[in-house]
Length: 131
Image (cartoon, rainbow, N blue to C red; front, side, top):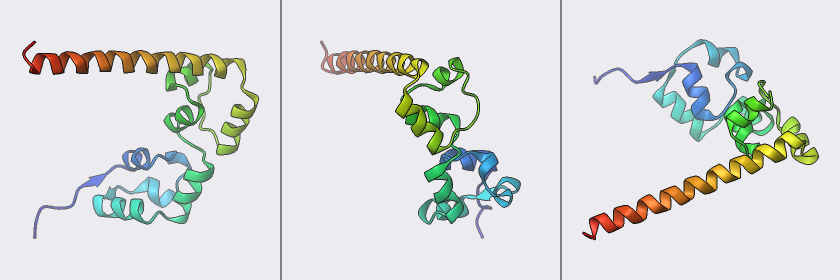
């Protein structure tokens, strides 16, 4: 028999599954999950997991991604709670001023990151070519 199987904390498993831990079943929150059980859950999501991924409530990183902003942008807008898919869709329908502003900031940051990454890649290619 080999080494014992890896286990992860419920919070880690929830993060990797992209779900809000307090919304998961108590049985999921209370016990560490083995790597094989986690992989099985990924391959064949339980009904509760399908429902959470579809309707939420969603963790902040998922909310930010769905809104097209950063988690810092959510904090600046004082969005501190998990949001449901319905709440996210309502924000996207109404486009409050803070969301328009944070989406613009996020787009600028992403564009600058892409520019820097392209410049660094070009420098690496030149360096490897001996220029």
